[in-house]
Image (cartoon, rainbow, N blue to C red; front, top):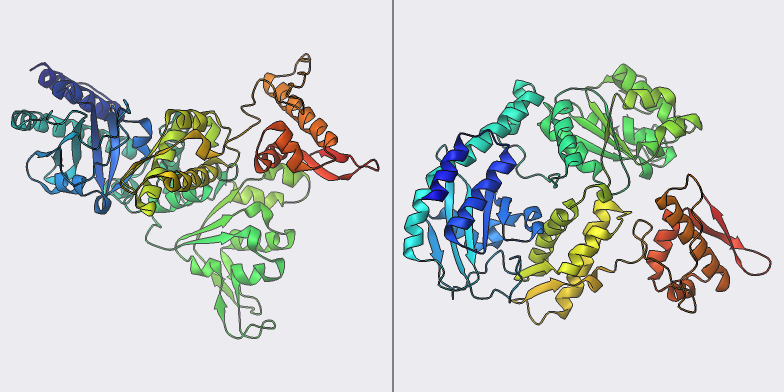
Length: 531
């Protein structure tokens, strides 16, 4: 009776959506004395966890395709709560993810029910217990009494989310968001405050036609942010055209952007529209815009200023209606000061700058993203379950991620392959151990001492007045690597072996520290410079 009263009491409280979801699973987990519970929202053909209890945190980053998970599919399409027999052949989506990590969970109890909002299936509640026979027919009847209150809680959370969106968007953009246009496209996964602020900012600017400059390090997901802006805008039904400015040869850049007419140059055998015309009515995404040559920058500026382009070889201007979204990992202000980027173009592009936070500043979002990539790899590799060990989770959280989300994806995919190769069968619960991640020394997380050739740690430099701990760490690592390189005649492989790190990771660390090999001294020792 008390759990029912708690759910009823929560209906009268003003709770943010995420906390309301969490309260539902906490109360129900206690009511049914289960080991794990999940609340999953239906988005197209995918179920997305919005709150879990008793499951690994990375579960929140997973996306469960109904076609890959027949147990979830059965729950969703049933009109009543269901219990699965302990010996059912249907795999459990949470195998290996229960926090206790006791056993392999090949036999355990599962119960589930579909939640409806406004007569439509909203999602499912799943209950898992490690002990077979934990759930009974009596639990099914009890669950029916909780369903209506759980559905009311979910409805309040949905209304709250829509009101938040309406506060940030004009009415038409708010309608677009509420109608589920986010389904079927990649999403920005994470719950850290910085990412939540970014999402709010994107909703605010999406419906305008202001030019947006997306800033951030390599691999943070700038293209994903650009696609989010387009998908939330009034131009969402028109094309979004992606231009990789770094891959544009200067000789062909004008033709690629603005098009050409037949005979304009050697090889122009027919009329061809450029990227601007291809994006008519939609969004033109200029990725790596900082790499554009100055000559092309001038022509791009004219197109943006006047809203028209001229095909190469033609004197006839073509009117265009496109929204410009650009992205760069370079410091364009510094490039302007150095004369490498036009100031007028910079101001045209950066009407509204947006900064995407690096992964190292997003805390536990690393585990959510890892869970997302694990589920993708589980499906690709055809294994029953793919999970992280505790040590692997700690390693992911401790690593500095110089390559950000893109590097995390590659690390998880590579580790999944290694772990699968060691697994006995595809039906086993495959655990990714720390050693499979191949995460070594990082400037953001160095060990107390880096062993030298004789196993001795190099002495740490004295902390100068005004020198931060991070600067002292970086200085220590630079000196250690430089001295080891000198001892080994500039041989990076031997240097890496003596320092006990992988050669590729040593190169990455050296680049991050601004340390590069640039030839050799007359005595044969490497000459090192700092950028």
